[in-house]
Image 1 (cartoon, rainbow over the protein chains, first blue to last red):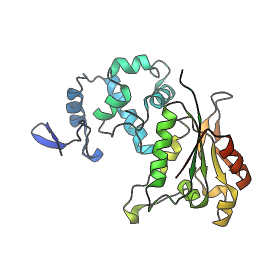
Image 2 (spheres, rainbow over the protein chains, first blue to last red):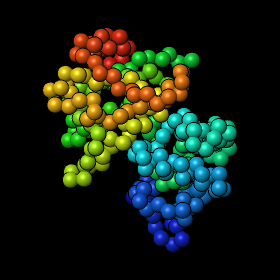
Image 3 (tube, rainbow over the protein chains, first blue to last red):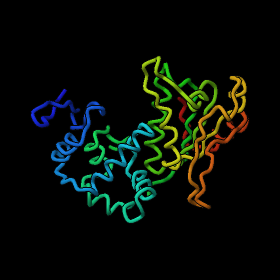
Image 4 (tube, rainbow over the protein chains, first blue to last red):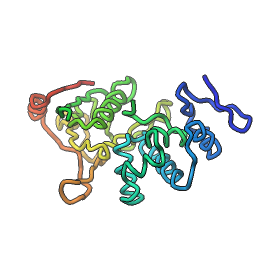
Length: 111
Length: 135
């Protein structure tokens, strides 16, 4: 199993760099994962990541991007529930990158 | 534009003990994410998959039943349950999770996705579908 170095301690990740155990996650690890994705985290990023973690907690899945966009619109407002806003935050795929940084598995239906 | 097909997923097995129920659910979510028209049937022991208050603690297996509640977000809102199967197991619709969706084409109200059907109606559903996948 590959590992990632976070402040001197090794954290297990899979071949694609997703956290192996969701329970290992904390914001420091999130920040380290963001670095591997070359994403500079702002409050706007955390808002999406926190939303995804809550969604996972409730439904036990990471939603596909279309579902994420709609759900964000409902929870955080229409100005945020659109692809343009989310892709500006996470250029390589909002569902994929935000899940990875949030320590969640790869979204179901994401190829 | 790609062609939209009617996919019908037939779920007939108990949720735990075999991997069919979980695999079916994952395929359903993937199919729905690709904008296909998706319907689900729960019949035989498959009705246990959407039973409410599932607890898998003693078995050590992951309780994936909360994921059925996400089906509405994926626009999967045609969930058919065979009456005869429920009755044979001493169950009613009240023993099932209240799966709902938000009606975007009408009044945006939360509506039930569950439709009770007879074995005869299931036969018709199968005939009308482009693709039938049985799990």
